[in-house]
Length: 201
Ligand SMILES: [Zn+2]
Ligand SMILES: [Zn+2]
Image (cartoon, rainbow, N blue to C red):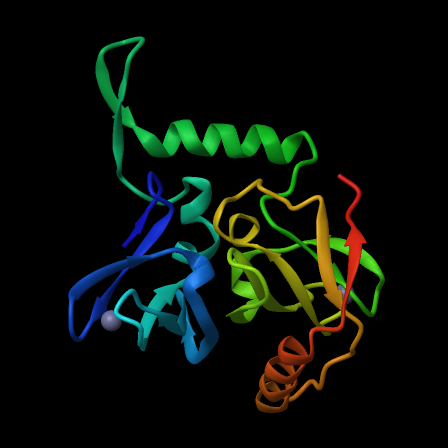
């Protein structure tokens, strides 16, 4: 249900049938308790029809599928004129870039005051904010477990290895409680006291 060529997820819309949306149109991600193998996330996403709908996505589809891992899509190799597995090609590219020190996704951890690598499964709230194409993202830091809010481009979220050179950071340490953090997230995005941090690349 993740399409690596368009970098979009397919979900069901009650009105339109299937709908395809990018990760930046997710609004809330919550790991379901119990389902550890594989981990499953309950998400809410903003649909093209203008409403929010629920959906389910696996951990692999969130974190690995955008890197080309775990799928059976093939592509036409123009050098050999044969169809070959896309997974091998994309995974090879991803491995090379990660090996060279590039991060597929990153965010700025406010309490630690530094940039950290991250995977989409650590994003838990997203909302459009400010100018078109900009999203606010609440991220749970995989290192210190605190929550930070970043203001980034949609591409920063949707495209692996696209890291914004500058990221907006909310100067606020969030409540560990998820429900309270969601309220604070909405309030902070409305008041928009962002501090631009340049992330060293
Ligand atoms: Zn819809
Ligand atoms: Zn941290």
